[in-house]
Image (tube, rainbow, N blue to C red; front, side, top):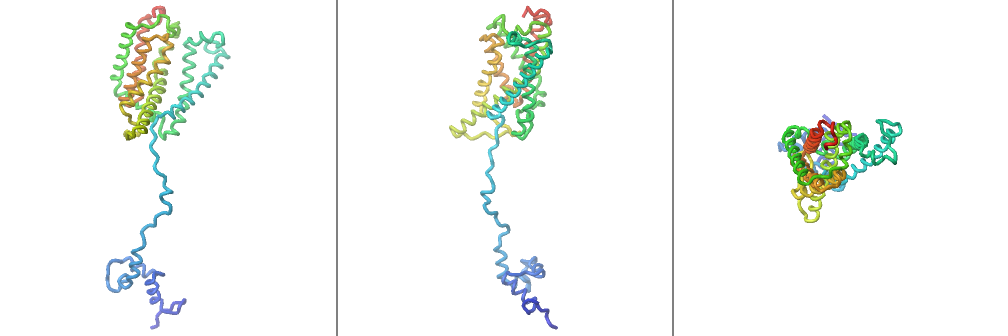
Length: 351
């Protein structure tokens, strides 16, 4: 019986396929099936009969490395510690936008004679002590800046705004009574400070409490919006930025190893950084309230001590909500004492 002829060369197809297999030029489907039985070493198998082909197959790498692989893969970037001074600067820019919104709201309210007041150049100084102007202007500034922050910062942090500032409300709620006790301790310090180093009798803040309505308005504002947004600025952004700046400087100057991030991906700071950050945070915090107290030394020192306690609460719990609760409860104690002193805000002359 004649063997099948190959149309190309005129020789038997199986013989030609075997020759091409030995040279590594061609592997037909029958030979490929036999290759899958490699390693058996049985007589008559292709691998047993074609040692040169086996050695050639074994030298072929399983995967060929990508050309310029080291150039194609960028080195991993260090994880950013947030918030830092760059984020603090961005917050101030958003605050400028909020300030423009504040001026716009005040202009509209004044022109339309809403809320019963008219802002002019002649009464600007007296209007600055009007509780309605204070609540409206500061409330607009806070809310506008906060609304922009909720949108902008997640774009840089790849997490929500509250996660970035370490709000952690659930932890603060769990420790509420401990935090409220801390606020009560701050109030006791305020009483002692008032007895040893009293402020002036005609402090500018007293001019705000001209009527019972003004007092109630400031009471509500002082235990809600004011502590929330002040903590957001000072212990949500400024304190972490200062702590990170201290550690970053130490890493560059003395080659100190960088502290790892915590389990939530947020920075951990050295003790020196936290002390440095708490002190520098407390100075401007006391400064913005100094004018309200007539720039008196006693209230200024008290505000520094209270701010240091707020910083300690924030750093110990790693929760901004914790320091906010202490701040709000402290303000509540101060306003409550004023409420009792003036017989329910009916006799403001007793302040």
